[in-house]
Length: 171
Image (cartoon, rainbow, N blue to C red; front, side, top):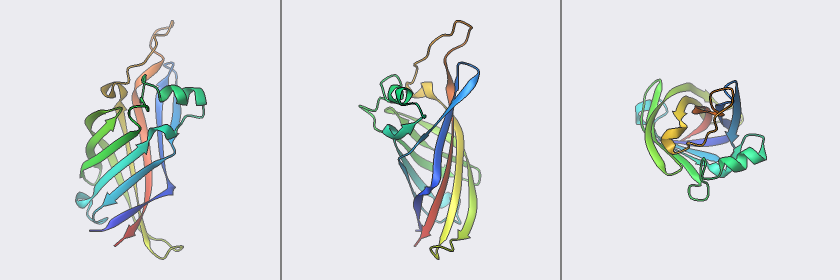
């Protein structure tokens, strides 16, 4: 079985949510790992576990970040990590169990492998994946919101995310 060593320097994990019904707020997680095992040439053989340190959330607003860490959202005091464990990977989809704030749901996201390339700096080979999708934050107990005088609510329930990962092929 081949191991794919995660390269955090050449990877990113970003998210966005509708704000005040008219714009989107974006953020990122700065501390996460993605463990992948299997044959990079056979997607169905891949097994992956992504672990995200919720305390590393960064929306470029410390007050908002601190609020997101409370029981209104991620409840970092009790649940320090978001975990995704794959069940199946195909040419264009990845399905697995996503655990956020202690609640687990099966989710399916868009998946794309960007091939295999030689790395001229290391002499080895690398591969890259993109995973994109949308989750309903309310399925994970994140129901905080506020009605607006003009109608609608402060926060959308859908959270969109985009992960771009680069991995060194080992073994």
